[in-house]
Amino acid sequence: MSIQPLPIFERDSDSKYRTLETDAEAYAKLKPPTSIVVRGGRMKWIAEYPYEGGAKPGCGSKLIARTHRGTEMVEMLTTVCSNSGCSKSVSRQEVLEYIENSGGRDYPFHNDGHIVRIATAEDVAQWNATQSQAAALAPSVKEVLTASGLPLKFIAVEPLFGGESLTIFYLSEERIDFRELLKTLAARFSTRIELRQVGARDEARLVADYEKCGQHCCCKNFLKVLKPVSMKSAKLQKATLDPMKISGRCGRLMCCLRYEDETYETLAKRMPKVKARVETPDGFGVVLESRILVQLALVRLESNGHEFAYPVEDVRVVPKPDAGPDAGPDAGKPAQ
Image (cartoon, rainbow, N blue to C red):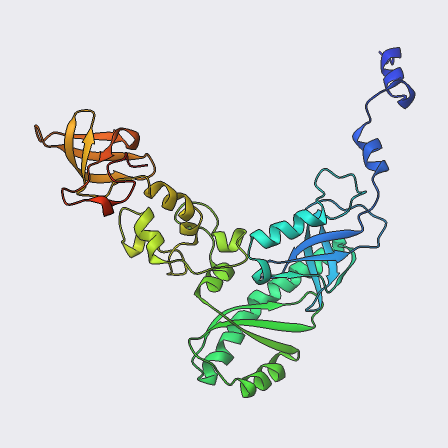
């Protein structure tokens, strides 16, 4: 039995009788982007490069770009093009605002390069071979660094897609004169060598995977500027200062302590201090403990010694007996 096409379906296939476009028709109307934001390298730097091709790549596409280091394979993040029509495109102002809010001048952003082409199957195969080469080179590079006797620790090696150079990441606590080491490495691997010193947090970015929270390490996933974290933040946010619980894969204080630091400081100002005498709906008492996030104060009542948790709105700090005119306008007011 043959299938007979229904007239209604035949009519829908004709664009003259439809108000909505198909995905193919909408894509055909898009113009190629003129500028593309990409991510590349072991350190996941970000760049915006001009694009002059006629194809219309999408987010996540692999591209071959001429970067500030050489020829590399990069990943497309978004288009910066007002006429691209893509729902993933962003304005240049949005890109600049994101950079300013994510580290400003310290953000690893580049624009000295251009997109060569969309990566082909051959390019992907060559890139996979380059990655395999990096894994094979690591033991040899580590052997040379160890034999040099210099006080440095090998972290990772990164060959470029185009083979112009070989970047070696190392960790050291002091300045090193590695001119002789460069000569040895260049003769051994027959390419330009770049030795790059990194810190403990950058080491985690290069070699770590998952953090104790179950997510990818922030430094590896999205953080580009690794600012120092103070012990003050740890004391404010954590109930314990056990190094095993507040340290990340790098051995330093976890970067995520900075995320909510401002919120914790604002909420902490509303809480009464421990051992402060307060007035509650059930009478006077002394604060034993404060829970910042839930905004509760644990109070031991003076009348019967019972302990209750009260919302901060129901607790009023009692001024000390010697608090005179200099006690300030906030003396005796509810903690808020």
